[in-house]
Length: 572
Ligand SMILES: Nc1ncnc2c1ncn2[C@@H]1O[C@H](COP(=O)(O)OP(=O)(O)O)[C@@H](O)[C@H]1O
Ligand SMILES: [Mg+2]
Image 1 (cartoon, protein in one colour):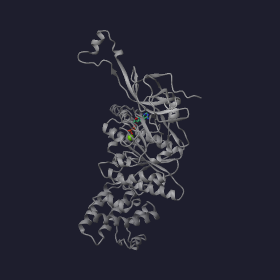
Image 2: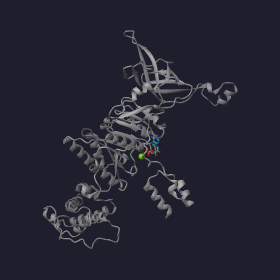
Image 3: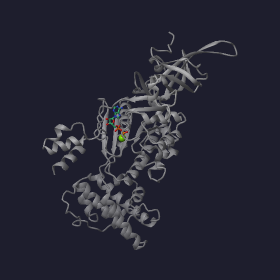
Image 4: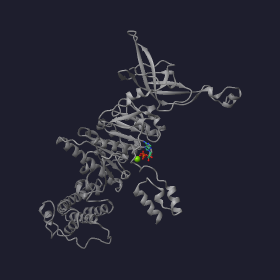
């Protein structure tokens, strides 16, 4: 069956400039940006005189109007109408299409000959586009359809995600929807997906599939699962404070040993609190004494606990005890100056006052299972703690996937990092940066894939981005952002980058290995279980509360937490 390169709709003709890369199209009305066009023509092989059939496929990347007679102060449009020249006839529309391929019966090539001027330009028929974009295999998932072409479905190959993914676009352009959609579809293939959720916007995510499990971890710092060195750096970040940090690290190490063994025996329980309140008399108190590096503790915390806050739960009390232990252990070190001891102790106090600490927080890998999405809600932490947490999670993940690989039981994992400019900033040193970079470099060998999400590409460190081979570009208005992304993908030419200014919500330019060799303008599917991004209809909530109506009957589909917070505010 011969492939038809033409369609019923002629959009224009080839203009005066025609190359194998760009073709000018002349039409009466502008052709919308992102329109896929085809140009059938024949060429003559100069060497042997044979005729070759071509079907160039291009995408409109620039469009506009031009007037035949420029309007000047002396010749205005109205004055021409009064002399009988219809303005409609004096304008035309030159567009530029970027040629992306030459499609044959049995293959697709890069175009090498230009179409002759005046050739007809058609709206690309679905058969040609499907041949280019609808590559389906066991490893592909449907992500949407070509923009304004619902007849051409777009698939991406998840196997290519070992070379990571970058999703960028302004706020509200549809990034989080894309994250939810990809996560859900990959999980339904059987994948393990983690979302590092800075704002807690995925906590209410519902899967579209019955066989996908969603776990939400309200991420707090679990002192028993963080290496004392890392925790000491979190508590005392100042580079010069090496003595304070060393003291704190050793104290944390000893306290961790004790707490670990108690929690192992008694769990997070009243019993554990009781035993840790008076370690010298209890069995486990021996533990510390037995370790040569840890000093013996003769201390009784009973009665010291400030219980003016009656709602202190077991977790809070354990955290309080840990803090006191660490301070006692710091003070018990003989060989250091008292100033460092005092400073370290006050920083420990400060840390435990402000950090979200929990002994129950599981590590994401404990939940890593097929067909699951693990949402790490880091909204309770401050920026520094998020930074450390991300580092801890990534280091642990890399160790885990490597271990699984060595055991011959690989468990590939994809992790989405929202608000990535917080962690991979060009202008600011962060703790997690080196860990992200390591995953970007080494992750692919073990099946740990990164998906970096950010609305500020200009602030993202280009070194890490250079490891990324798959892209979703959504609406980007700022020129500096467009320039920044042009530097990271060879396929993103200036005209394509500029076209991002006029994208609608949910539309994306998808590039990279996972989609194949050709850039695709895609309308991404709406994820049906993701409502968090939608803006609150605050006006109707206010109106309802003014007339004392039940707010809940008016506002549906908004995040329950945000909703109840707002309700509390309005009713107090
Ligand atoms: N593909 C899409 N189709 C339809 N609507 C969308 C799509 N993507 C996003 N939206 C709408 O836009 C809003 C903002 O999207 P979101 O994904 O939160 O943007 P971002 O994460 O880039 O700020 C969503 O609540 C949704 O209403
Ligand atoms: Mg978002």
